[in-house]
Length: 424
Image (cartoon, rainbow, N blue to C red; front, side):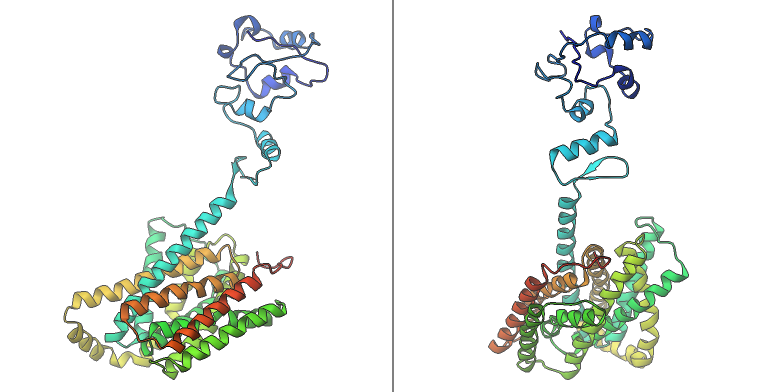
């Protein structure tokens, strides 16, 4: 049995309440509910006649003795058998405020726990990024060992990425961004730096061991701090001190590298410059075109980079491609295996960069550089095991010092305050 007694302190008005959510007659005793065809005005006048305290007795499983003023209205209205099938945005916001949990209200008025989901999503993206990079480095080096033409291979990898994006856009698996003149102009700089970084890394891979290239490229935070400082960012002394072990470790690894080559060293250094500038200006592009996500941004950077690189590749080494292809087929013996290696290197190059750009949507270029450096630890170990490259003790020590310096750098920049209006 349900008894309705309204106290003077309770501001419940059934006439206004019933306009928002209709009472479900089947859930209450007929003796306490007016018939549906009864005049609303009579019901309202009858409700206001009582001044006694009210309580609900076991309605929808609620315990007895709960007054309207103390009842959590959001739970009441959101109950599966309650008065409304869908809570209103105001009630949802009140429920979130009272619970004290870090929740957000979406445009549709629904409460979302975005922070844990966002952290999980970034974790998955970083995991895929690392795995895809390992696969790319292994097959990229296999191809370059028998077909030492990095300009053509780098161009083909950009071509694979361009085709991949066109397929996603054509099948509507990825929304195609609106193309404007300002959008293309904004991407010319990042695409140029991406081209420089990509071809320089490929040249380095073709001349030295993969592990050595990645040890040198672990100095990327050094370049990131330097160029970010030129662009107006300031860093405390501990950040500058943290990059010293990186410089020392990379230097020690370089002078003790078995496969040392100046072409490979300079290729890796130039690649650092190119990719750091790409990261910085890509972040600025995302801020100017927030409707374009990281995947679409990288897709158009890939297309523009292909237009930059391929004409230069033809000029640099185009006359040697046919002869080099014939030698590669003779060396490997099976043309299908060679084609597979080239295709895998192209596809996984785009995939690992796609994952990195998805992460770059939500992190700063400095954090990206740190994650990129820690990824190199895994890549170095994997490639040494696969290709069985000889590693001297001092070389391993230098690599470890460089990685340790990266850790110190990440700790020094972890609590760096962000400026208002700066990167988020």
